[in-house]
Length: 292
Image (cartoon, rainbow, N blue to C red; front, side, top):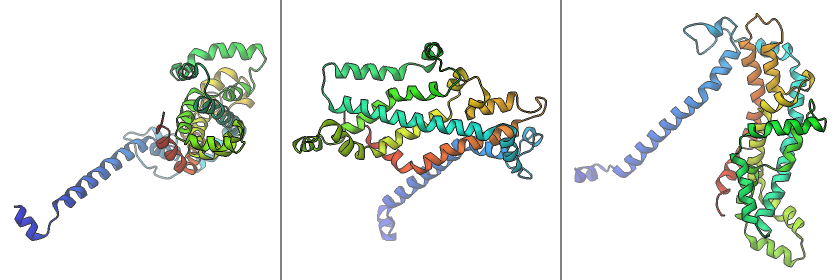
């Protein structure tokens, strides 16, 4: 058999590799379509009418795409104001989380002090604490200082770092050769200069990764705005969609098609941010666990 294959010039190793690659590509495609189906279904429902969206058997594609659903969803509530509130909160919260997490992570990665490892473990323990445990104490604190029904409770806590951000940045900083710091010290640079001139430029991939996670979490947050905000003019987009379903317009009219359209509009900024920083996202995830 082998002599026949050699005579025919068949490279069975190459054939085996081709078959394995083909099967892997098929499996990857099936998984990609499976994970993308809910999003594609949402887009399809956002282009259907209120009757067609509940038709049985369900149709994957609308008979006639109703692009006006997006306009109607935008005009049904103060979508522009909700969008502006979410943008302000997301930008300021992401900026605060990047700055504070970088400073704390740099201290854990480069500065030696007694109890450093214990403090780092205590910091990591914050990743295991559910947000529901701290939401009531935070509400009582913000009520005492008069921050309820403002955007401050959604922004200011981000300036005290996050356990996940500290862990991600610390692991990445420890993969940067320490010899660069020593050379800078010899040239007269101080700790803050090394952070700005050496560490920060090399941390662009992991900072982009953290920015994506922070932006997604802040943009999609529903519990925090629900607890801390009372006025409609302060609502963010997740609360705006809830307001659209519960209070906007005639409560007896179906609004599922408008909710789908509003959800797609709300999702677009997250997709744009991820697509623009995808290269840094992959690089930051791959390199964050190299050392330490």
